[in-house]
Length: 421
Image (tube, rainbow, N blue to C red; front, side, top):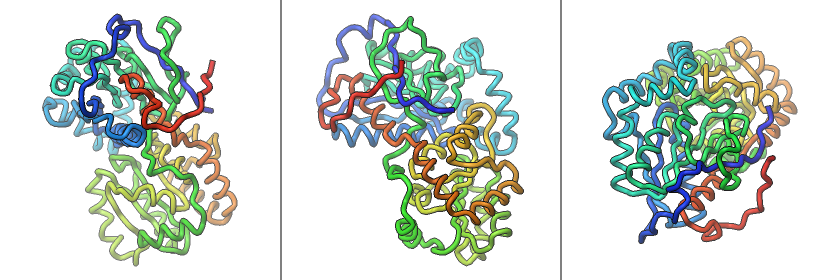
C-alpha cells in the first residue's frame, strides 16, 4: 500500500462556519485538544502539533489538553473502561478485536454516543465554557461527538478538526458524526464525497510525531556517539523492543529469547505504562552486565531509535511513524486486531521492515540481518523513505489558518502543495 502525500480536507456547509471568525482576544488563542490515554499515540500526536504551533507561531496559541475519558472530571464508568484497555490488549487482544469490529458502523456509534459515551461531553463542555476556543481538535475516535456538541452549544462558528492517528484503516468512530475537517493518512480511508465543499489542502500526515524524531538514519559514527551518551554497549547488535504505550506484544518473552540466542547483543526494552513487565525484567537486567536495559516512558526514545540497529515492535501506528522518521529498520512482532490491521503489510511492502510474529521467526530474522549488514542498511533507507516528518507542521498550519491566524506570520514559507485529484 502506497500512501498518497496529500489529502483535500473538506468543510461541512454549516451556516455558523460561513460567517466571520470568532472575535480575536488579547494573548495566546486557546485551542481545545481532545485526547485519551488508550495507548500513547493520541497524546503524542497532540504534543507534536502543539510543538509545531509553538515553533511556527511562537506565543500565538495555548493548546489545552482535555482527556474526557480518563482525565479530571471524567465519569467513573469511563475511567474503568479506559483503565482496562491496557490489560485487555495485552491479555485478550481477540476480545478487543471483537469489540472493535462490532462497533465499526454508523449505527453502532450512534447507539454508543447516546449510552456509554454520553458522559464524555461533560468535561469537554466544561473546558469549552472556560476557554471559549476558536477551534477544537479531536485526536481520539471517541471524542468527536463531544467536540461537535460543545462547539454547537458554546462556541458557534469554531471548526472541529479530527486528526486520525491510525495508519492503514479507519474505524467508523473517527467520522461519526462528521467533523468539519478530517485529516487522515490516506484519502481512501475517508468516505469523503463532493457533497461537502472544500476548504483547501492539508498534508495527509501519518500518526504525528515530534520533531525530536526527525533527522533520518544516523551514520555509524553518530550511532556510536549516541550509544556512548546513553551508556549502551558500543559493540555488537543493539536491539530496541517497544510495545506501544501499554507495553504489549510479549516484550518479556522476546527479550529473554534474544538474550539467550545472541548473548553479545545489546537489548533495550521500553515498557511504556507496563510496570509489571518492568519489575519482571529488572532482575535479569541487573545480571546482564549492561547488555539488557529496561525503561518505561522515556524522553530518550528518539536517541534510542536513532542509535539502535533494529526496533522490534508490535505494529502500532505511533511507533512505526517514529521509527520511520528516525530511519530505523523494523521487525514487526504482532498487531492489535482492528486498528492495526494492514500496518504490517504497509511496512513490509515498503522494504522498511519484516514480519516476525513468532519468537522462532524473530530469532531467525535477527540472525539473517546480523549476517548481512547491507540488508540492514537497505531497510534503514527504506524506513526513512516511508516517513512523513513534516506532517505535524502541515497540520499546525491548517489549524492556524482555521483559527484566523495568517500562516505567513511567524512561519517559514512553504512550497504550494500538489493536491491529489
